[in-house]
Length: 149
Length: 155
Picture 1 (tube, rainbow over the protein chains, first blue to last red):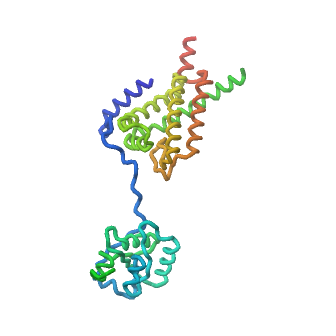
Picture 2 (cartoon, helix red, strand yellow; picture 1 turned 30 degrees about the vertical axis):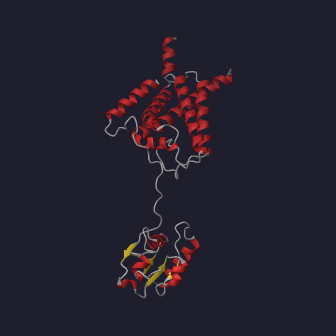
Picture 3 (tube, one colour; picture 1 turned 90 degrees about the vertical axis):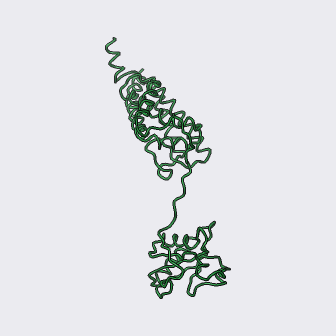
């Protein structure tokens, strides 16, 4: 019975167009990548006129020492740590502050590296249901020039 | 005597249930052997050279054994086969859980670990099915199905 089933299985597999090779040559990718967290963000050039506006909410994603050294006026500081996710409470507070400000656009800037902390923080904010979230291409170095901390 | 007869009658729906279970479990594996091969590989027990072979052959053995139980043909052989497969599946589950793998069992339609994760409940469920297969093996008296008709003719 088992032999008959085995023969039938091999014949069926050989006959189908998408049959499996009898011996796998490459290991299966059993570790699926984690899904990208958060929502959509859009890039914004550092010299964009849209950056300056009463209805733009600015967020600085860099570490505290870099923020203290220099930041855009009115920018809210929310450091993005790659190893430690932004606490839910902080994100919730930020989302409420954005909603209360009446801003129509949120612009986040980070260290401008690859990957960019500003872009990733933007995704997390966007994932909180905030629309029109942008990140500055090139981050703080693009905004402040090479002397940016 | 009366208990034996009751058990023999109970073995009939038990084997129908098991047969239906195995036939339904094998269909998606036959239709989508790639997904089933990935499920087998995720257990990380079989060497790579055997993964595809198992993914191709195992569903057909399930189909054959399940259909035989449903039809009531060579029930003892089919229940031995099913009990053997359940024992192997149980062993794989225990090893996967011991290794802390966060995965789907791959028993039915391929699902993600989030939807159908292996757990102690999966082991209890498989133990129940193993017990049922052993029950059929021990108490089936060919009361319905092809074996019953063949016996009637030969008598």
